[in-house]
Image 1: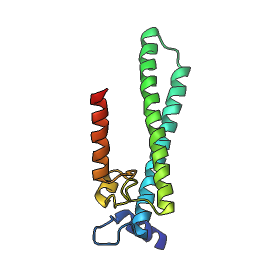
Image 2: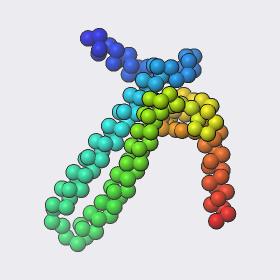
Image 3: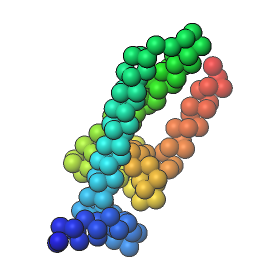
Image 4: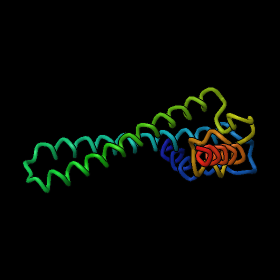
Amino acid sequence: MANQLQEQAADEYRPGENEPYMNARQLAYFRRKLVEWRAELLAESAKTRELMRMEKLRETDLVDQGFSETESAFELRTRDRYRKLIKKIDAALERIDDGSYGYCEETGEEIGLKRLEARPIATLCVEAQERHERMEKLQRVSE
């Protein structure tokens, strides 16, 4: 019963600006959020693999084969995106462990709770991210 109440309290907790930045409770919150996201991606990937395996076992006509191949290509791109996201989630979990989570890789400043809430794998504060995006845009224009 006590564990259940703790889990419910943890589920209801949202980091607030009025508490110390990246305190133990906030870190536990973001760890749980990242672990749950990772588990969802892995479950989705497993489902996709199973669907693709079942699809290959079915006999289909040429039109169905073409549609199936297009669908498979889309699913493989999605799985690749998931794989990259899982790598970023793992890196974020490592940053939680080493104490650097929540701080900009470039400036060392706080990334901010709102940004981390929206994108828990963020590694840059808003200003640094905007600088990177401007540089990328300039590089694309000059190519």
